[in-house]
Amino acid sequence: MSSTSLSPQPGVEALRRAAPGRVHVPGEAGYDAARTPWNLAAAQHPAVVAEPTSVEEVRALVDAARTAGLRIVPQTTGHAAAALGGRADGALLLQLRHLRGVEVDPAARTARVLGGTTWQEVVAAAAPHGLTAAHGSAGDVGVVGYALSGGLSFYGRRHGLAVEHVRAVELVLPTGELVRATADVEPDLFWACRGAAATLGVVTAVEIDLLPYPDVHAGMLLWDAVHAAAVLPAWLSWTEDLPESVTTSLRVMSFPPLPELPPFLSGRSVVVVDGAVLEDDDVAGALLAPLRTLDPEMDTFTRMPAPGLLEVHMDPPTPTPATSVHALLGPLDADGVAAVLAAATTPSPLLFTELRHLGGALARSNPEGGALTSLPGSYLLHCVGAVVSPEVGAAARAAGEGVLAAMRPWHVDGAALTFVDDVVEGTGSPAQAAFGADALRRLRIVSSVYDPTDAVVAARTLD
Image 1 (cartoon, rainbow, N blue to C red):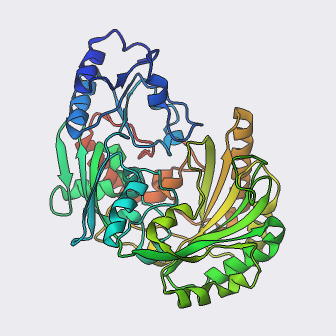
Image 2 (image 1 turned 180 degrees about the vertical axis):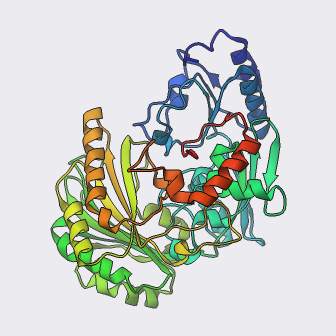
Image 3 (image 1 turned 30 degrees about the horizontal axis):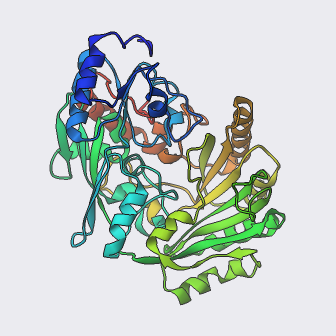
């Protein structure tokens, strides 16, 4: 079905009745804004876009789509939209960004989070109770997609992947049935949702554990990129013996001269180490001391309210066209350190090359967990470029793939699903790499039970 063929058909009218005033087809006012994801480099051309504001509307839209023969593409913010690779075309795009809300239970240290909610809303709701969450580096990322696909946070080496903190998943199945899956009710579905919920239905809410941090010692250290040859090896050496209370990343970043950038970044190349130290200030200071001997130009590490951690990584505050690639690395010997230094500092179209420190609780599998419970490796290598034009985007992606190729001798098997940014990334299947053969086989069985007609289109597939 083409993206323009549904308009005169009865199916659109049924969808309009399901969500009055919030259903858009090509050519109508509101369609382009509704179909546009956070990653502006991803072109989506669905047959219909619907913006439900309640669970009842989601159920009605799913029923109408099934009757009309439309596949369903649930989307919260669209940070991962590039991975759809055109599979939203001709389908019903369910934009869940208006299905928002957070209910905090401070005694139980949990939150029930509606399907379109972002992390900044959860953190803001938890903060008055002295609590926070295993959020990512950007506050505008959707909770559901991030948490149910793994979720790598600055609390991660102490507390593990965000998916390990999910206690219940509420989703509308392709049949239109609303199900609440927990360890005791629908346990197979709950197992599968913790890693692959987007392949099973439309998640309308999750219940998550919160973390007991009213404040945190966090911040960044910044040097001019001319110091990369000293800073990067020193950071890698520093990470080898850290306690699990410390989770940091290092980025080599290059910025064009833009007036909207702060002066310390505009037109510059810099090295940044940022993250969190879950210790008191004296211990945190002692742990950071080896890096401070390298005389950073900026040092913002301090005790801050827990919501401040959302700002530390300086992720873009508005939708951005981007492309990225990633790989998981094992320990780096002297040759590995030299290789990553050369790859990160060679001039290229990339905005940054990043290493995120893994290990600790991130590496420990939980036999009571879901399909995804851990992330192997010592570091996550992540390369990001801006897609200001198709040519620049292609050059940036090629540069990122070149970095991954240079580091191939140190790759370990695995993938971080929240970093999968395209239909095919590197070689092999991201699902195979992330889950492994046994879990992937079980996921496909569960999917065949709950979505036998393959009605739900996910950015991260089980292929």
